[in-house]
Length: 270
Image (cartoon, rainbow, N blue to C red; front, side):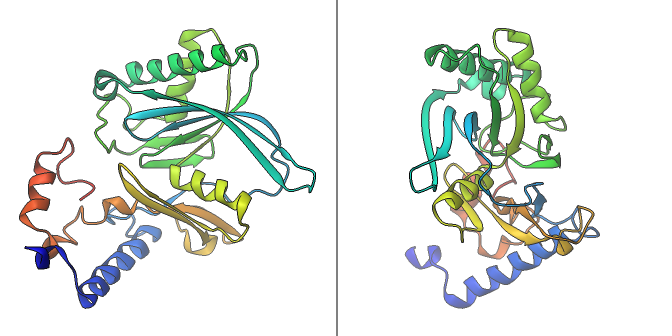
C-alpha cells in the first residue's frame, strides 16, 4: 500500500518534464487555451521600490475564511521598511460560497463595514488591495475576469465577470463607506511581494493551503499573452490545474479518483 503512494526519482522526473511542458504551453499564445497550467500574467511588473508608504486596507479571499486587514507601511529609524498589520478573520457561510455572486460580495462588504467600524476608520477612503486566490485572467492590475471557481466555491454569476467590479458594486450597494480598489492579486503574488520586504532576492511565491499554487517573475519576452518584450512580469502559474487534461492519469490511484469524484468540482485541481 505505502509503495503505491511513493514515487521514485524517475517518476518524479517524468512528472517534472510533463509539468514543464504544460508551463511552456501556457506561456505560448498558440497553445495557451489548451494548456492545463495557464501561466496567467498578473500585470505586476516590479517588486516594491520604497514609495509604498501609508495606510492601506487589504482583503484576502481564498478559502473558507475571509480576512480583512489594516496595513501600515512606513520606514523605521534605519530607513528600512516597516510593516504593521491589524487583521480580523471572518468565516464565510456555506450559502454565500455556493449561492449567488451578489450574496458572496455583499457578505464581503458587510465584513469590511464591521472591520472599519471596529477600528473607527469608516470615514477614511483608503487604497484597497484585494488578494483573490482563484484563477483570474487579468486585463490590468485592477481588472480581472474570474475563469472558474475552485476550493469549494460555486457562487453563480461570478465566472466570466470582473471580480473588482463585483466588489465595487457590493460596496456601492451598502453605501456606508467608500474604498479605492487599486489592485487585485493572487495570494501567491501577495506572498512573494510581502516576503520581498524582508529579502530582496525573493522572486517566487508559493501557497500550500486549501489549494496549492505558485508565481514567479518571468522575462516579458516569453509572456506571449501580453504585448512588449522589455522587463519582467510576475506570472501566476495556476499549477493546481496540472492534470486536468490527463497528464497524471498513469500516476493516479483509486483513492485519488474517489476524492475527485466526491468533490464539488470533479475533474479539476487534481
